[in-house]
Length: 94
Image (cartoon, rainbow, N blue to C red; front, side, top):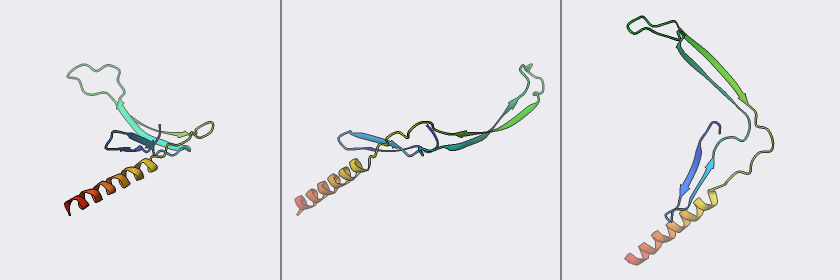
């Protein structure tokens, strides 16, 4: 887990490959949270005192970096297959 997301490909035969685009190094995460300080609020009464807090954390992975999955080869093969299929359709129309 971490910042980023994933790249994914699914071939026409249903083969799926996905790879994380997250950095395998450390990162900084920060944000703001807020809410009502009162634990109990009587219906119809004015809202309690509001608060906000900022936070930050530094994530430092321990141990060796995991081997990363590379879907580029599958992507290249699927593009080549689709191009060949298009060429075959063009030849069939002539």
